[in-house]
Structure formats: structure tokens, C-alpha cells
Image 1 (cartoon, rainbow, N blue to C red):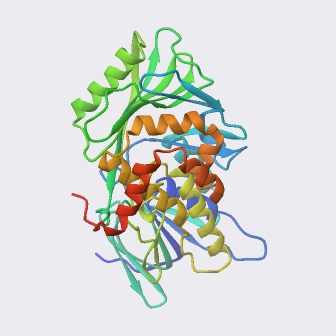
Image 2: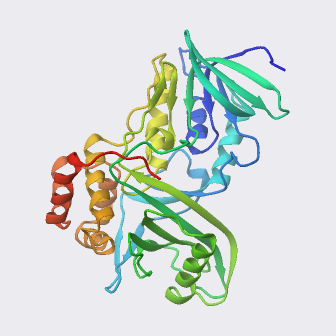
Image 3: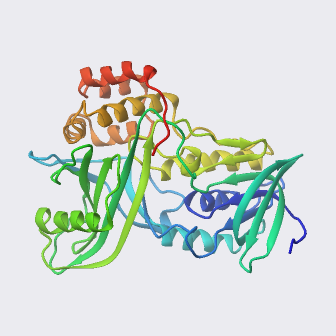
Amino acid sequence: MLRAEAEADVAVVGAGAAGLSLAHRLSGHTPGRRAPSVLLLDAPPGPLRPPSRTWCFWERGRGRFDDAVTASWDRLRVRPPAAAPIEDGLAPLRYKMIRSDDFEDLVGRDLAHSPNVRRLQATVETVEDVTGGARVHLRDADGAHRVLHTRWVLDSRPLGSLPAARTTLLQHFHGWFVRTSRPAFDPAVADLMDFRTPQPADGLSFGYVLPTGPCEALVEYTEFSPRTLTADGYEAAVRHYADDILRLGEREVLATETGVIPMTDAPIARQTGASVFRIGAAGGATRPATGYTFAGLQRQTRAVAAALRAGRRPLPPPAHSARSRAMDAVLLRALASGRVDGPALFSRLFARVPMARLLRFLDGDTRLHEDLAIGLRTPVRPMLHSALELPSLPRRPFD
């Protein structure tokens, strides 16, 4: 059965962080302008809908989604493999954690009262350019085929495969939300990288601890490496970190999370048709050298919403500058080639650069002279070798 075409100014495909953020920014009226009509297409419960997850980022002051923040910290700590911990304040920044369920609840409540945003639970099958817009073929919750005609499509669905790259690593992790029987955490400090974990042969690993109270925290094991682990491998790694390194003692696992984030120097297309654009991780919002995505997609969706409200073409801007992406490509190559020791490199950077400045650097918010000063605090010879090697390397698909 083929139902009649529906109409909307904008179709937002996918209701993850990027899709919900864009819909939220487009919700409501702009004085003196007609608000674009928006249809937010959300996959039905099942394999196309991402599992619950945690998003972390840093920003100044109060943010748009602070009511969904689970916890935040103004001090971070990095633990080298065999040296004293490095701890520093972040002012004027704060490191924030949002759980996806809380984010969806907050945005969902606001969208429920929006005069111009509608939500539809449906599986998008294909998107095609047509004269004057795009056509979205979808299957709704009762299995009926529908066709939506819209002026613009902003697609946040994950890429089916990664573009060819010179270097691709995976940031993969498994974490436990734990409750301990005794106070085991300092709620004022988050552990960003704990390199006391066993290091893999072809990458690096670290622990990650986000305390939400003296007895509760998210405790994760993370690797930057070419291959993921088995489910049993992740469980064993987190158990070793929690029991043998952190020595948490008696504890209860309240929930778990697992994820894989590509870290690649591949160019990622932000436009796939005259009226079809990608946003979020699918549109290059992930910072290649860190895996952080939430702040990048907020920059993208802010710019896209402003363009749509002004009646302009909503091409998402690059979430990260060309200079940042070039530096990330060098770092990825140095790590993947084994020329630099990952734990030693990151420990050295955090020991020699103030924490707030280094976070601004990782967010592309530093000037050229600051970038050069930070670069000189890395192992210069292997980094220069990697930089000189990059132009001659072919781009290959990731397998």
C-alpha cells in the first residue's frame, strides 16, 4: 500500500543526539519569520535504534541542555602508567556528562509542545533528490510504505561503511555504572585517562571514571586500536580495572554501556544530494583524535538551524577546522604506526599543558601559536616523520 505524499520543509532523519538537537533548535518561532515545518523521523524500537549511552563534553557556563546533565566536574585527573597522578582545574570550563535517556526525555518534553515540529516513528528506506527538494521513502510502525516530499533532508543515521582513509583506529569501550558498599570515589574529580591498565600490543588502553557520588560512578575500560574485543574480553577488562586497579571492593553493577567510535582521517561528506545533508557523526562531527562528538554536533546543528530559519541552504559547516583535522591525522598515524607510546604522549601533554588549555585545543578553540606550543610538547621527531609520510600514503577502505 502506498499512501499519499506528505509535505514538510525539513525532514530530520534519526532521533539520536544530532537529530534531537537539530529538532530542538528548530522548535518554536523566530520573530518576523515563518518557522520551518519539521518532521523528525525516529526509528521504531529495534536494532536501528541505538542503545542507551553516555555523552561527555566540556563547555563554559550553563549550556542549552544542562537540565539533562547527570553530573559535572571542574577538575580532571590523568594517571600515567607509573608516575604520580596529574590533576588540574578546568576553569572557566566544566566537564559534563549526559545520559542519552535523560537527554531524550528533556528534548521530548519540549518537542511535545512545539508548534512546528512533528515526530513520526518510521524506518527510512531511501532518500532521493527530486526537483526542488527530496523524497523520503519510509515504512511506518504498521508496515505501510509512505513517501514524504520535503525541501531539505538532514540525515543523522550512522554510515553503512567508513570512507577510505590513510589511518583508521577504533575507540571502543565497555563500562559499568557501579555502586560500592563503601565510599570509593571523589565526586569532585573525574579520571579522564588512567593508563595503569594493561596495554594492548597494537594500540593503547586506559580507564575512565566519572563519579556521581562517593559510592557511585561510571567505570569504563577504553582502547584505541584496530580491532574490537569479544564481549567476554570487555567484561574481563572492566573487571580487572575495577577490582585489581581501583580496588573498589564489594560493588553492584547497576547498568552497562558499550560503544565503538571510528577515529579516522577519512574525509566525510556533509552533502549527499542537492537537498540532502548529513549531520552528527555521519557528517563528520566526531573529533578524529579523541572520539568526542557531542560538542561538534552542537556546533553543526546550531549553524544548520540558523540557516534554515534564515531561509538559506542548510549545508552543515565542518565541525572541526582544517588545521585540527590535519593535526589529528598526524597523531593518528603516529599512534597507529607505533612511533609514539600513547600513554607516555598523553601523560606528557597533560603534565606540561594546563588542563583547560589542552581541552580548548582538543575542541579546536586555540590559536595557531597555542597549537604550535602544544605540538612542541609532543615527541617532535616521530610526529614530524608521520606528518611527512602522510601525503604518500594511499587511502584504503577499513575492513
